[in-house]
Length: 292
Image 1 (spheres, rainbow, N blue to C red):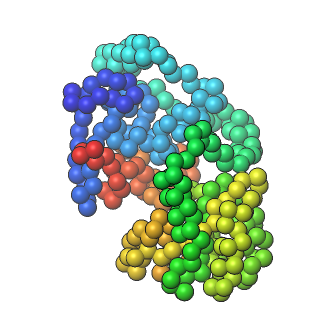
Image 2: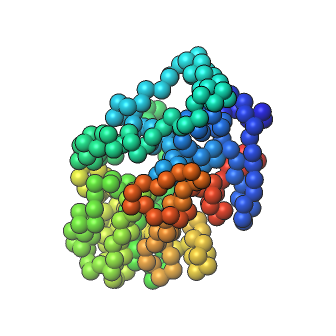
């Protein structure tokens, strides 16, 4: 009983272990909560699809299939009843069937997928910037526009790229300044990397498009993709806060995604091949740090 559950608020017996490369992992929620929500106690991933369980819960809440208690009193009463039924053996099965609930609302899911997410809107700050913050902002903008000393770098970083913007949408804006070597869009990180054939074209594009590029009603950030100090060793280092590109100025490649592996007694959905699915079972993934 050494830790408080992040969902139910009840103390529970927490476990902590150390994997490879001194990476710590520990349980974050109580066992009855994990059984009811059908998720891992450590990485909080759904046991059917391997996605974070809060993503699944938000989707089911939007579909109108899940109405969890909101007030603290109702939560305590609801989880106390769940815990008691599990201890009595009357509720041995999980209360969450992800595949069944999503399959029953496949028409709504298709309607959600067809929606346009629209532009990325950032909340405006109500109070004005202090003189120190204004100076830091000015220095950061100068750093983002300053070409790197390494003349072999011809890559630009494009940030705040919404999922609706594709490579075909960005290509005309970049080709207007010269011949391109490559253009990679990473929808998971909402960014893109464009590499020009010539350094002069990259300098002209950064100067013209900095704080002046709008695609599908969304203003994108354009700056230099600087090479990290340890990029040659496979570990991009921080270089003035700018995004790092690997050696040679080429855009970074995304690491291979882990494959799914079911826990004991769990059947994978149709079409999903076995592999490594959950962060708690992958010794190379980061976990909770006991010092924090």
